[in-house]
Image 1 (cartoon, rainbow, N blue to C red):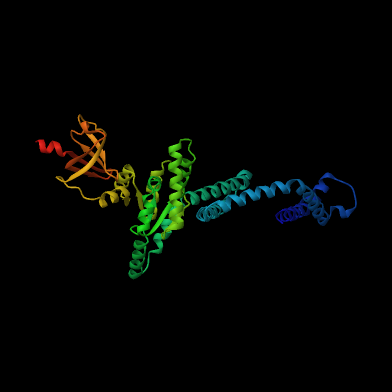
Image 2 (cartoon, rainbow, N blue to C red):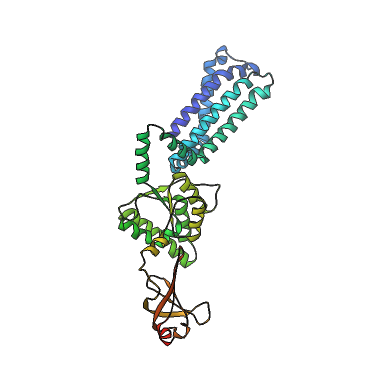
Amino acid sequence: MLKRIVQLFFVLVGGTVGFVFIPELIHLLNIGGPAWLTSPYVGAVIGAIILFVATFWLADYIVGLMRLMEEAIVKAPVTDVLFGTMGLIIGLIVAFLIGIPLNNFAIPVVSTVLPIFITFFLGYFGFQIGFKKRDELIHLFTMTKGFGSKKKEEEEAKAQKGQELKILDTSVIIDGRIADICKTGFLEGTLVIPAFVLEELQHIADSSDVLKRNRGRRGLDILNKIQKELPIKVEIYEGDFEEIQEVDSKLIKLAKILSGVVVTNDFNLNKVCELQGVAVLNINDLANAVKPVVLPGEEMKVQVIKDGKEQNQGVAYLDDGTMIVVEGGRDYIGKHIDVIVTSVLQTSAGRMIFAKPKLLEKAL
């Protein structure tokens, strides 16, 4: 069907060109013959036949090119196509307005070539602005919707607060605990998974390194579980920030545009978000908050695993992964001993417990 339309278009163009130019061409070449040969209608028929014959070689290439363009447009997000088209239209309108006074110039280059160049340039420039600034434009349009009565603003503010967006980073997806948190219902709102995070996960899952490949596949499995099994809304953000290379920087910019909250367990990303005024939820902070409270003076039984950094120190771990530094514990490596807690250090990076053997305490 598409090939027939292309051929029909060529026939119409050939007929129009032949109607206008072929009689003049015959007259200039001084070709003898009957008078009807110089008729515009005969020229239209000749032009239509010539271009129709040309379609047998050109139609397939043109249809193939149109198919490629169609696939590219269909795969592109709606926002990209919409704002790119709006920018293109605005650019063409501005080029048309600029070209009106240029047509009055007597210089042929200025009145013919320059308007064509300006049309192509401003059309391309407008498309690029609309395409690359789509996120800022969406945010601007969202802000303009808020203008109205005070009551309407309060209702929209409440709705926005109740549907706050949680933007997941790569590390928290691979970690896996986010699925358990969503299952318990402690995390409200909508989970936003950016496309560039999914792309990074895919690169990790395709890595030649076995450990990285397993981590990437685990992350993809976690996302599949959240989307299909858990009662929480999940959205994929298709946009990207091509001018930014780092995924963490893209997350921060997205959080600013959407007024969302970054969910992570990356200590460094946590600090950068705080410095830039972006709301952040650290899974490690939540894990530390719900750990059993250990106070100085309490007793516990641990197994010393390895040497510590300082002399005579030993290191043990609780079941949840909390590190216990045992003073004088080097002599007890591989053994289960009773220890007394001396102090507890808690940070966003985790919790560390300092203790000493109970036998040593009795000896003192």
